[in-house]
Image (tube, rainbow, N blue to C red; front, side, top):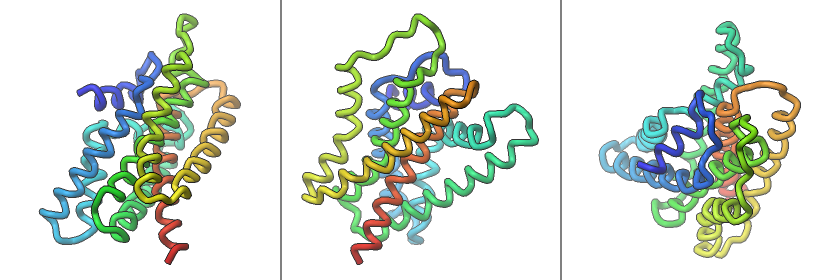
Length: 230
């Protein structure tokens, strides 16, 4: 499957080529598969938290949990010293817990339908767009033969990445959802600054980190909006 293979190759520890410019499309498929798992979970399991767990577990299984592994590696310092591993593990646990509760709040406060589906897919598409855009500034491959992606290909990737957000704005007529791009763009700017100050490191772990944090920020933005609108 192209989208899943794209995700796996982009965040593979041994990656030596730039991630596909269609990585946001792979985010679409990940979000849709996660939604399908959640819907199935609501049929099979009465407790409301189990479908969310099933959705997260399904996505992690399809992607071999490589973005999460990359996040843990980066937060552990990109070191091979096993004594540094626990710090990355703790950060990963905190990330997963925050994502679980944020997604649970998202589904609990709105009936399952097109609107909530677009919100879930939007989190995946935007976060994968952020990862792809970081690779344009700091290519995964260090080979001098690598060429920068054309403006047309970047435009295509950006369009694919923001389309669920634009669809959500059009469906709900709430332009505020477009503002959710601001915090993840700030995250991208901050992370690029950190990457430039770091002379070495696993590029795939950096992409996994910005993808995971961007996804969480989008979920938290939805939950925050629900809270202040009550």
